[in-house]
Image (tube, rainbow, N blue to C red; front, side):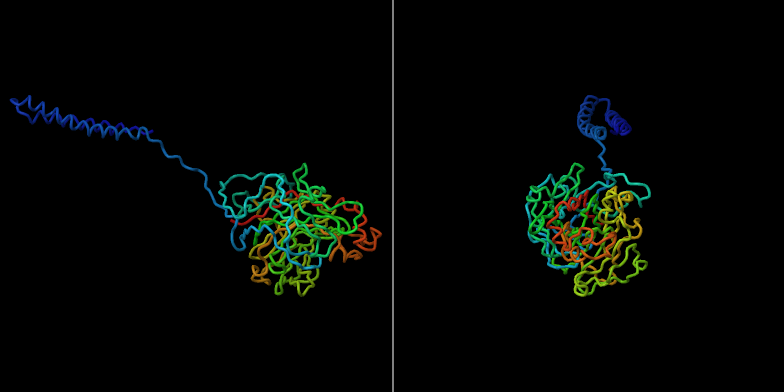
Length: 463
């Protein structure tokens, strides 16, 4: 409130001389006439005086405008190019690859649309307005984990999130046998999965996806394959799991692929078979995409190239270019024994990189929802775009996928192999069964550890 006292005094002081002047200009013989004239002028000027007084007092009752202190930014979850193509594909996209241990394509067959809880993921085509500086929820991480500065400096914002009671919202359940990698898994729709106890969100708030443990089956064993409705080109994909399927005959994967395999490419972010202990990361692409070197030092990674630097499926019998992690707790039973961890895959103009962080060494910026890959050190796997250019020609419009198949082109084919990392014996030796399919069909109890338990999947896009 502002009081204009000086202005009020000035107005009053300038009125008195005006009326005194009227009397000074009047003659003695015309005093009565002058008085009447002065009265008329006083009435005339009083109207203007009232206007001046009211103007002077107006500021006394004016409120200062309120100023919005917080800066706002808009996040377009749709995005374009490698910063995120948020197409909402409700059916997924499924190719038919028969890949050597990698799977391909997403489903054209959707399952039940039953909802579990309210969706937590924002619509990929929506525009959200968020106050800057708002601190995201955090979890405790052990000392020694890589860390970086706070959320305000992270360029990565969540475009899609799957966690908690609504984890299964926004996924399409495949309702078909595994006909892409020739496994003996029967993927079931959401309703069947719930009725059979194959999926749940447990008391810890984690999503669980199991393999059927019926003692014996005559054909395929029931399992789960889910594909995101959300579609993206590029981004930062962070998956936090406390348990993954393990055991002879299992072949679980968390991966993504394009709309018409091998067109659009495939990125296997987490994959392995049987009793392996070292995770494998693999790219599958159309001809012309390669790794620039087989030397981990040149590529700046801690893993090792497995067989070929050719990522094209036609020249590698569908196997693509794979990298095996050096960490012996990055997959399988060893991963489960440490309470799991986080896999982070960065897909940008420079190519694809994947990191693995055990539960005790998850970077604080990931835990705080403000990931900064530049502070994470060397990745497990690195696939530079320099020899796979333009990268957007080979990799685009991906959907993310969880599945667990059984036997098939990889787990079945290495059943009697003795060179698998972490396995002191072949599966044929340890089980006493000569064929993978016979073991899977006749030993349901062997699959009590064949389940995913996932805390969250978050897909970030850069702002």
